[in-house]
Image: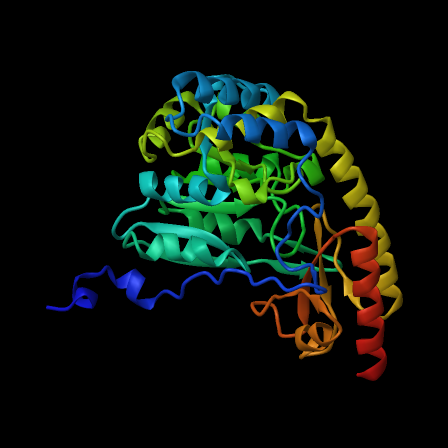
Amino acid sequence: MSVRELAKEGFLEAEPYPLPRRHPGIVYLDLNECPFEPPEHVVEAVYRAARRANRYPTRDDYDEARRLAAEYVGVDPENIVLTAGGDEALRGVFDVFVGSGDRVVLLEPGFAMMRFYTVVRGGVYQPVRLVEEGRRFVINEDELVSAASGARLVVIENPHNPTGSLVADERLVDRLLNETDAVILIDEAYYEFAGVSMAHRVREDDRVVVVRTLSKAFCLAGLRIGYLVANAAAAELLRKAFPPFNMSIVQLAAATAAFSNRDYAKRVVDYIVGERERLAEEAGRLGVKVYESYTNFLLMKTGIKDIVEKLALHGVAVKRIQQLGPDYIRVTVGRREENDRFLEALSKVVESS
């Protein structure tokens, strides 16, 4: 018997998530990263922690990071589960709540790993496609609630990636809680850019779970720091999905430093939002449809099917959103000079098409 015969079916079908390549001179606006280096106080905390990396992190390391995260969110420390990035947080929720035959409702377009997390656990995913409405995308609430009937898990990205739209509100969450028995997982990776959150719902609702990350506004993508916000009963279950030392001593030190002095994240958000609006206006003048965004990126419909390849020829990398169409691109908002490089390249491509 071969090893492939022993592997779970989902792993046989899945394609590995592609890791990025980076080359000098290219402007990379494809991964929704923060364009700024971490602040000095976080870097110094990482350096100090690295000097004791021969030891495992302690309960105190976890407790302090958890306490500060809870303070930031406005909940109790028992409502916080620390994770190695938002991806580990998502995987943990699937580990706890999704098993063989369980149905998971996902938005489309959406993060491919959500489908993978479903099928490798023997679950079945049911997509609910977002509806384009002017310059934004919306959920058909009745369709979502109907799909969620009998489902084990409903996943909602809010703000949504890759559209940038706010797609969920209190009313939708109420309907899902009142009309279904599903766990409601809300991915708030871009919370800081929108200022809208459902995290407060965990106080009364044990079926609401929120995912957050320090990869975006806090500029710590490379350190992989995330966290779950959940009702105390749900958080107790979720902690069992992770090994005892799921985060390194360096990650915990970085999280503690970032949450202790988090004013820099607001400055990052203010800069990115300003550049986002400028980028949207300038791209719109070139005849490109730009969708409203509550994130650190913009979705654009260019009308040019090979737009990604043509921009690459000018030294600019963006993300094609194939689920919407070959001419849709997601553009991360970078530094001003990076955004100008993109606009210059886009102008040349539009003029020659």
